Image (cartoon, rainbow, N blue to C red; front, side, top):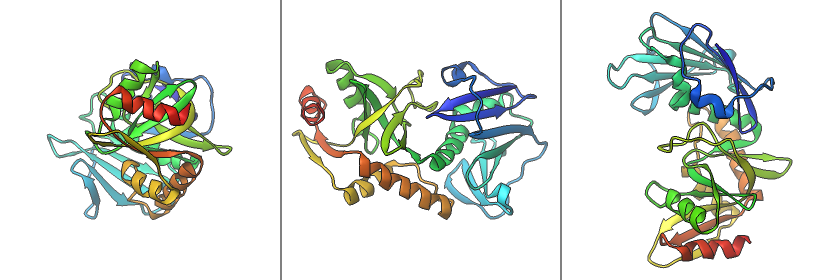
Amino acid sequence: MKTTLRIADIPITLEADILKGNKKKFKVFETDQKADGMKVEYIREETLELPEETVSFDDTIKWAAGSKEEEASKLYIINRDSREVAYKVSADLNWKEVRVSCGVKEARPLNSFLYSLGEITFRNRILSYDGLVIHGSAIQWEKKGIIFSGPSGMGKSTQSKLWRKYKRAEMINDDRPAIRVIDGVPYVYGTLWNGARGKCTNKSAPLAAIVLLEQEKQNKLERLGKAEAVNKLMPRSFLPFNSPENMDKALKNLENIVTVTPVFYLKCRPDREAVELLYQCLK
């Protein structure tokens, strides 16, 4: 099985000829265009073992340093129930060439690309395209993109919903939108990873604003300076803490994004007034 996806205008070739997988969710992002963007190859391995020295940021995700250039990063996905290694991911420094070894117990291993395995590989690869993936809810309004971001529970999806209700905005992505700066212009893209929302979109738009949210009893909006915008967006961005080289690249991309994108801090209620307050700044 071989298919090419195009996510954030980055071609990604999946090769898994001997493996079963559900291509239905890939349909929105499938393309006939062939380009040398990223290759993810799946293979079977009888035994997958976790090395002694790993770094863990999650109880099911562990990292290890590679011993050679083509395996600069190694990622292990642990089965939450059996605690066995389900997948081993080996990637070069730029995540252009990725090999996924999967255990024999994985019945539909290609589906892993729909979840954490695919998301992690993509958000590392987009760093080489002047981009980042952030935690937020992105909409398209009058051919402009807006991203609402903030800690969980701050109302990202609620503000997106209000804009769809009152300003006829359309959803781009409700959990993991991607941002790229191309020829000095920031763009927001839908991705395959959309949180609890089942439907993914392959939309994109020039990014007009990033809006950081905080729930308050009164609506108040301020535009942040570059340094403060970077500091507040870092916890909302998916950064490669396992790789100093890629971390430098990610922070540079984040700085470039906020240099060309207005970043606002919106203290707000979940009401129409909050929508109108931001609307007046963007119209």
